[in-house]
Image (cartoon, rainbow, N blue to C red; front, side, top):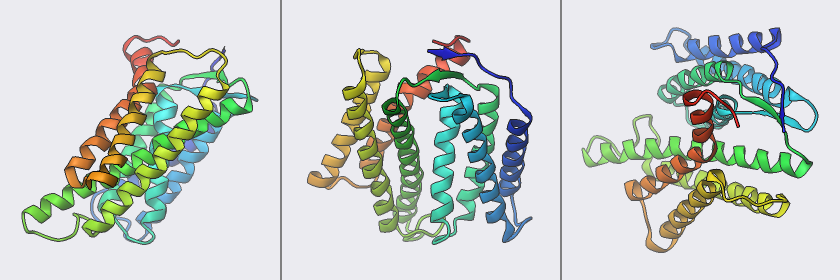
Amino acid sequence: MILSAALPGPWTLLLALLAVSSYVLAAWPGEVLGRLAARVFVLGIAGHAGLLALEIGGAGAGSVRLGFGPVLSLTVCGVLLVHAFESRLVPLPGVRRVLAALGALAVGLELVFPGEARTLGSSWGSLHWLLGVGSYGLFGAAVLHGLLLDSAERRLRQRKSLTGPFGLPLLQLERLTFLFVKAGFGVLTAAIVLGTLTTAHWRWDHKTVLSLLSWVIFALLLAGRHWRGWRGQQATRWLYAGVIVLQLAYVGSRFVLEVLLERAS
């Protein structure tokens, strides 16, 4: 069931301004802020998270605001949060700037394409939705580390360095990449199983088919990693393919409906 959408309120605009301005400062090239850049980045994530809680969770009891913008923004915020925790152990200023710019873009898209409020039907529906979006964030973090892993391998082949472009050792990047893949696969599996058990009328629509296809791709990736020893680009190509299919399952379809076709369903 679709509920009526509300116009952005003053708190929405204030949190969006806080998030975007903080992200822009954190993404600014050079060392303008110095050591404060990391704290400003975290401030941007806090504003971003507050905006998401207000916009997605503030639609009313038993409902959330779904759509291309909010879900993509929530996914990006999850990736940024993972990076913020990880950077306390291994600072990656170059990555932070790129992610801060991505965060500012995600907040902007959330405001331009706010989606619509929909009822979830039950607490199980809410849990299914949270698990699905959680898997998006975990696989997004896996992609981030996969890109760093590919870059590290290119540097290794060129005999430039045994570490990635931001200082992480190759083996550490590989372990982190597959740690997030395994976590994302587990959460995605739980979301699919819960959706199967709690959905009254099962439909083989594009969302279901693409979600299951992405699950198969990730399962093959983990199986190939375990039994065939897949590593490097052979493994990351499967990761990227699975994430693309998973994004198409919801974010991609909503983008077509809300942006290209300018309608909702």
